[in-house]
Length: 381
Image (cartoon, rainbow, N blue to C red; front, side, top):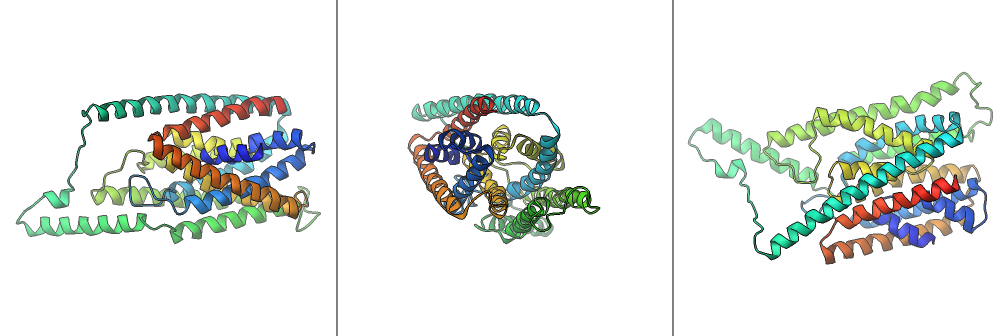
């Protein structure tokens, strides 16, 4: 059961915790805390297996990684900031309210995702029919620098500058493992782990909310992750401006980074984290539908969401390991099971898309898993 869940979940770019926790609770007969810890270990294995596969993959229509690193770094900071607020709300709100919110939020996400999957499927069918009938047309766009000719020296200099900037941007985007992204993501992950251990009283058993430094420490993520989100917003907007300056056109399925887009995505990232912390689920069930709504290329959206799960899953696994809730042998066993499912899921979905030419299947799987999680989590709750 766990192997099947992880195989399907990783195909949709999520961890599958909403299904794994009830499975372990009922199937293994353990308490809820133990079920959650086993789920965290499994999801970390899923994320690791997923990463080793998607990290080597390239964008289906461009010379760049399949993972959208600018989007991942931007959303990760906002999500982790929101998780802190969500966990606090989880402690304050009655359980019946949390269950109701879970059913409403995830139910709505499942409905909208499946609705989007149907529309994508119909668009793919229409394109395939047109291609078979020989009526499909391909438009070729010539870059301004190559089609424009002038004897004006200033115009020539401007065209050459555009060409150099364009080449530099494309070379930067083509890097498989961008150092700037890892230099930002690793400190974010380290902060998340240290913060979890500090509030979990691993460093000091007496560190409670009665200690003077507790609330400043509790609020630290809002400052740290707020700063990283602000930095990534500015960086992505500058990148969008540079692309427009170089005359580079955004492809279908790309995010057009402007100030307005960044301002719109900040509350989306924070809201996803709040929902994840409040409902006790991974952010994939929230982030995934957001990427679908943004019309992100399905393979790119799945890879980016799966990449983000790696960092939150690692933080959760380390927290449960240090608290003694997740024994090492269980962590290795269930993590290995998750890694196997992750590898299988990615290869199966890649073959399916290659054979059918329908990326919409990813969106169908995502919506279906979220829908199943709504039913099971509500009954379980």
